[in-house]
Image (cartoon, rainbow, N blue to C red; front, side):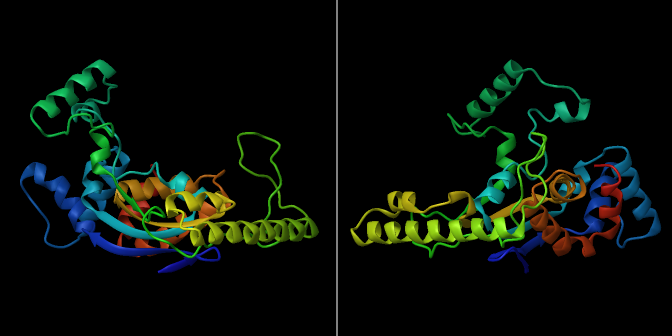
Amino acid sequence: MIDVLDHGYVKLVDQMGSELSIVNAARVSFSSESSSMSRRDIRLIQYLSKHGHMSPFRHVVFSFEVKAPLMVARQWMKYRVGSDHGPDTAELLGIVVPKEVQDSFYELLRQLEWMPAGDDEGFGDRFYARNEVSRRYVTLEPEWYIPDSNRWRSAPESKKQGSGDPVLEDTGKVLTELLQQGLRDGVLRYDEAMRLGVAPEQARGFLPSMYFLYTSWRWTASLQAVMHFIDQRLVQDGAQSEIREYARAVYEEVHSAFPNAFEALTTTI
């Protein structure tokens, strides 16, 4: 487990596959497999990545437990096991399938009872797993991410960036104190609502600064999706500072077991 921010963490709780799983998923096309990693297998991983053959990388799957502020959690929600495709041929041919064709495909799945009627999540979403703790059902001690005085950032000059340079430390101290004061007032109202017997799913409305409120969830993702998340939130510029710290923790949890895959993918994604 890797601690992140003041109360958060990233913990790898389960894993399926290895680098050998990647090469054997690719070699099955020729009805062959490797029993141990060789230099030839490393070159195959590099070839797969270079030429965009991503499906073998989806045979490695990780499951993480994450505790993070809601502002981080909501950014994280978009990352799925692989990619959200319609019919499989779309990926193979590299084409965009018209919506009416996708709708016909999904309707066929429903007729075959492979997809429930009225399933609004879509076929691709069924390969995605994210389960979050619910304050509707459990009463958790509220915890918030409270930035130190040196972690407050100014508004950016460009709207394409989320934040600018750090504010002055004296300004940061004032902001931290204001936040703490608002949190204390909100907790008093929340506790009073709970004392009066209000349902937790409504009482939580009194909790202040919801975007700084911590939540926890399980995230299951393929190696390809994990690498995409790391690339978007750690390697490339412009990501929010807090989620960059979580992306770095994810990287530290898994990269040592997949050195060749990480080296190959970071040069192409």
